[in-house]
Length: 228
Ligand SMILES: Cc1cc2nc3c(=O)[nH]c(=O)nc-3n(C[C@H](O)[C@H](O)[C@H](O)COP(=O)(O)O)c2cc1C
Image (cartoon, rainbow, N blue to C red):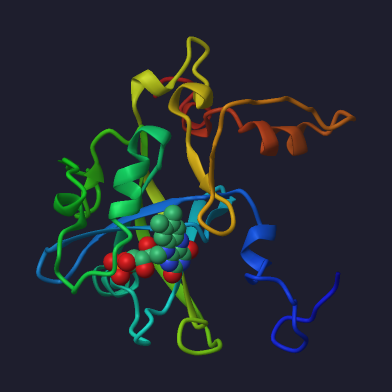
């Protein structure tokens, strides 16, 4: 089949677009508003966009009433947000935190989640989530779309702090993805959880390219002669 979005009918029971871009990692984003009230919500339109310096983005479609999402407003107004990794163990809490609630309602409390303080930013971290990024807001790209929910606010932030639970690292210092089982969004109401891994190395000896994929050595240590 072939269709042109918004121009020709797809003829399917549900728009297949989001079911084609899968699996999408979940940006479980915590923020505070100007009054210091806590907010937490999942965004599957989430990614790292570069890694040196590390920058992430989440994309929030406007609410069904056309209002901008709390996560966007808070990040813009306070200049900070935290990304929490969403795992199989906390899948129900992820879902509960997605409910559209009045501004100021604390989804941590709603989902029965404990808060952990951050070091560089005010938004709290989700206790039990194995990895969190503390982020400083950079900018927002706004894409006008088809009402009521098509418009999107794409929020970018620089990662200034990375927390990894020691239990989430294996004996070789690698993130133990099979242990932590991140969840990811598929289409419809479907999700997946990481339960297998396979390896491939790009052919050739382009060290810079391979380091970009594997993750480079610790530049902080290099800069200080290994003393850091
Ligand atoms: C797993 C999951 C992924 C979601 N991804 C998105 C997304 O990418 N963009 C979006 O606008 N809403 C997404 N939602 C819905 C938001 O989480 C929901 O609108 C939430 O109430 C927004 O909260 P806020 O207004 O406090 O920011 C998602 C919901 C779930 C359960």
